[in-house]
Amino acid sequence: MSEHVFELRDVSFRYPDGSRGLENCTHAVRRGSRTAMLGVNGSGKTTLFLHLNGILRPQAGTVLHDGMPLDYGRHGLRRLRSRVGLVFQNPDSQLFSASVREDVSFGPMNLGLERKIVRERVEEALMAVGLLEMADRPVHNLSYGQKKRVCIAGVLAMDPEVMILDEPMAGLDAPMQRELRRILERLHANGMTIVLATHDVDFAYQWADSITVMHDGGCAGTWGAEELPAALEELEPLGLGMPRVAELYRALVSCGMLRDDSFVPRSHGDLLLQLADVPRACSTN
Amino acid sequence: MLIERCAHGNRWRRVDPGAKGLFACCGLIAAFMAERPLVPCAMALAIACITVAGAGIRLRDYLRALLPPLFFLAVGSVTLAFSLHWAGEPVRLHLHLERSQLPHIALVCGRSLNGLAALLFLSLTTPLTDTITLLRRLRTPEALLDIMVLCYRTLFVLAEAVRDTVTAQSARLGYATVPLSLRSLGLLVANLSLQVWQRSRALHLAAQARNNDGPLCFLENEYTGGSSILLASVGGGALLVVSMMLGGEFQ
Image (cartoon, rainbow over all chains, first blue to last red; front, side, top):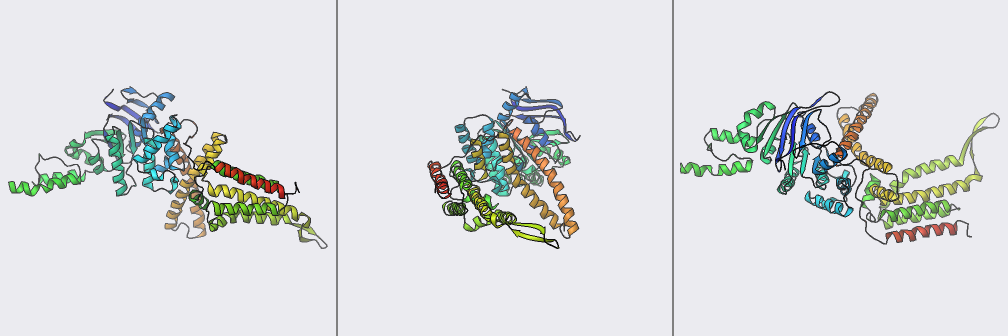
């Protein structure tokens, strides 16, 4: 089996109105990774995701899944979409049915599974996102964050290998963001490959193990999270800013409060732990 | 939203929609079988009592749901009872009451009231998703059901969009004067048309992403109370028998 679950080779796509979607985009998603796609609005993140699910077909270049070019035939797309789940940014664009349980069952029913299995999968998916007690509630009575979780459950119920989420944190309050993050952690711990788009460089830096920056329809670069502090200068011109923790860490290193060879913190909590050791380090010196 | 709230919050929410549909259907048939005005009126009252006392719909909510169709029924009955015509010397406009037609009009009103009570029973106790489940069981064409599912969901999405747009327009004095209101209304309609198109496209993409290439299929809900169909049959049968016994055929 290929190391990369997806590969895009020089993929280009323009929408019918002439606007650019992707321009010679080359990118690979490692199996089992947590990939964050960073980029400003219009940089091509959503277009790239629609290519990965086979909804859009490249006008130039190739998209490979498991090392094989995508099969755009009816059966090929059916196979692809049963293995690659896509969660859209706006939940109201994804939710069909007025009832939570019914909507979550939509994907597995499309897979042609037996009703007993569909029922089990729906229960499991709703439990995974913590919405089991709301299964019979009408969708329009849910909050925005709960609707997002229903969308994730709808994809989870299809039991995909890869989950693609377009701006999952957009519009969510802090507790809901933490809850969603816990859900993503659990899914990844179960072996799922997760690819998500975000504008939040701090979240991407903390959560992802691979960060790709999209710019003008192409992939401007991919870094492992541990490589990111060294690449901060490259991020700045792309309009994304720097992760605040990395920025603060560098400032602390440059003023001598932290050693240059110390572990690069990924989160505020990590940095606080390192700072807690500083007085001890000073007294030892 | 009132009907929606009642349908999701009543005591018989989890009862099989087949049972509720059967009872409502019997109520409708009984209305057409009645031949004296008091019979359907009495049955309408009985169905209303079952809806309020049995399903636990609040009386105030029931009356609020009943009033608009009742108003149309009243207007329709008045126009049936009275007629306008030119007569006399000099020619004047006369309002004429057709006394001979009053029993027929009373029967039509009674039947309408009975039918209204039966349909209100179904709509106030059964969420539309359950009604769609029932229609699917009754082999309604899939295309029609898909349209119902999408329209029902889109109704709430668009209602939210209308609310947001009107709020945004009002905040910028969009409805301050009559000409401004007309202009804002026009912009609202234009904006909504665009949103309908965009949302329908987004829903199509979302359906594709979840492997849909045919009818919209969902898992049927599970319902409690296996005896509900039997109870509904007994109740509905009772309505039919009462209607026949008091209707004049068997007197």
